[in-house]
Image 1 (spheres, rainbow, N blue to C red):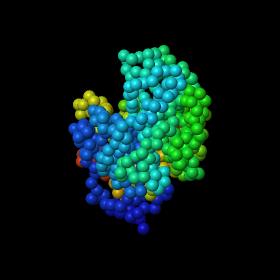
Image 2: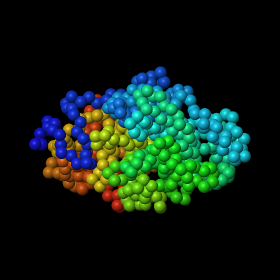
Image 3: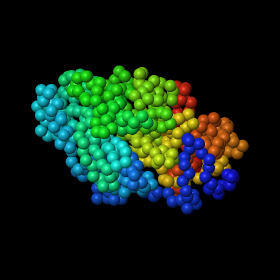
Image 4: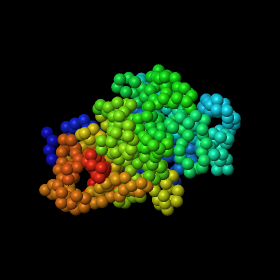
Amino acid sequence: MITDDPSEEATPVRDSTSLTTRAGKLSTYTAPTYADDYSSIADWSQRGNWNLANVHDPSVMKADDGYYYMYQTDASYGNALDGQGHFFCRRSKDLVHWSWVGSTMHRQPSWVAAKVNEYRAAMGLQPIKHFRYCFWAPCARKVRNGLYRMYYSIVVDNYIGNGKYNDAANWCNSWTERAFIGVMETSDPASNNWTDKGMVTTSSTDKGFNFYRPSGSDWNAYFKYNAIDPTYIICPDGKHYLLYGSWHSGIVALRINPNTGKPYTQQGNPWGDISSYGQLVYSRNLNSRWQASEGPEVVYHDGYYYLFLAYDELSVAYNTRVLRSKNILGTYYGKDGRNCTAKGGEAYPIVTHPYRFNGHSGWVGVSHCCVFDDGKGNWFFASQGRLPANTNGNPYSNAIMMGQVRTLRWTQDGWPVVMPERYGNVPQLTILESELKGKWQLIPLSYKVGQQCTSVSMTLGSNHKITEGFKAGSTWKYDKTASILYIAGIPMYLSREVDWESNPRKATIVFSGLSNYNSKNNLFTYWGKKTN
């Protein structure tokens, strides 16, 4: 029997939208102590102490050995990763303490240069002799017992016209060369030995050989579909799909052969009929070839495919949106009812956004996510977060990229909400109504390009009245069974997490909720944290 005793540690009755209880006592819980500003240990020689420092575009999968493996883009503060390989790995048993594993690709695969020059020959262009590459956004998945795949992006950073490096001195009125998605496989992630299986797809265009660019301010991109940012899913019916795309025209879905990890049907030349390069499933603007959306992540949950998207530039404005569909190929809808496949447009809800609680500089660039579960009903959202510029007097602090894992809950009407505070493995003991009374900080996450959303106060008083701050004078109520706090009728989904802004850090209660997204004038996500 569940009582209202604050010392209670019984397992609550939960529905499918709730978290699974984790064992432990709050009285003995110790919060993580690693610093958000890791600039003092950012050097390559300190990688054994990084934990989640120097993480960008993470992809997380759980392997059969019980570890979570995280892979990432090659970005790092102070370029610490330069010259050390590509698509680095770290692993963890608890999603809090991560150990360094190393690079999964020690040098670029030779097939990239060979394929580029094969295409250039067909286009009547001279071969490139000196390549410059960028290594971006891997996606790792368990395919079946004994087989894991990692899809990765390699961008050729040379001009198409003259084949020279993409530098201002080499400008030749052309777009830069194409991106590629390749695939690696392993039977044992712990060994970190991956076998490259070659090309999966490349950037494609409906402009033939017309790669002319009149000026650097022209954004009518040569490539229609940009082969960057893959996400891989095995559907309940056994079909495999790769979704990819970055800025150019939108996100496409490409069916994959389960046995090879390559396209299900043969692809033609990437400048002819490009229908074999994927089916468009989302566009922020159907009339634009250059749009601020990228980093798709797709997962299946309870009858829907959920498509998470990164919006805007990555250093500050990055924010995350989500859509859903009954079919992997669409139609994808927002919670406001918008058909974002056929009509395109802004995706809602907002999942993450630049933000700041009191007592901390806050975080910006919180996006390009991966979403995963632990096999026990608990879901998580991982991304990078960047510190704002000039944090702690450091003019380069915006290049500090901390890996951030957050708890994700599903609302009763089937939408994901992500907790405002990062995951710290706090015991998920029953939250009692008596614990909710008192002062909170609440952040309305409305869309503000390049700005942090900041917190306002709220006090939950006796007799279920909100006595101060946000929605003052309104009522609140609590559904303990579902762990949902209703603020003026708005459902807020609760979790026990770490108060990362307090000193010392400690366990607290947080919430995330959605406003009425059927109203175009009320498109808010709410984040809240109990402060006393």
